[in-house]
Length: 317
Image (cartoon, rainbow, N blue to C red; front, side, top):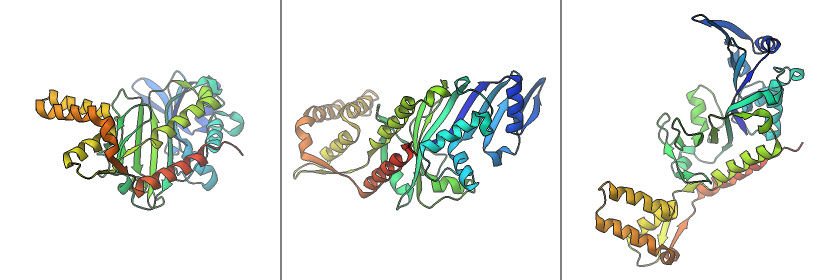
């Protein structure tokens, strides 16, 4: 499940020499400062590092790609990866006996981490992504189109500078082709990014911490809100259907907050704002007159996501 991770650590002189040799670093300079950095070899090796003059290393790599490379010889993160295999790769990065840097895990800090799953769907990922509205178990997180991609090829939650956690779903097949790589058709990627971390690696690798992150990942995406067809009883008006659809998608609180802001901004009249409030107040009695239909794409996504998650979190031999 682990993909890109960024680690930092302070190295002793002997550890610096080991890192330079192991990672094939080259000496560089900027002004009067000298440092060591990855050469073009890193594109084949999959490990990118910089060591400053004080012995501080920043190591960036895709755990998923390194695990696949050990099996097939190719850096690829589109196939299933079990947690147990990801943990072996992480351990080997810093284990001298495994050809790693020889740095104790409690001396290593995790600064950035991606947890994700990729799985193949029966239709174009765009068909699924365009129906996704919000995600996140802990609080409402609206998903936005990422305009760095073709429309509806990727949706993400807010990723401003101060956001520490970003959730996204994207068309992995499209993304790979855009970088001259090839993966299976109709592959979709479901990923959570943790930014600005400062966690000892030894703490992350404890069972209870791993269980916390993976369980939260599952809850975030299994509770995803999709666009659904809303059906009302006979006699229900179109305006009532629209209000019901909004409440059933986002909840009463978000529904009221949204229209309150519209009213404050002058986009709603006092009368219109009153009708929204009255509908929300009556919702406990009205709710039984509306129902939503779960579409086949949503059902397929949920099943594939669940199957992929159960496979990935298995840490048994």
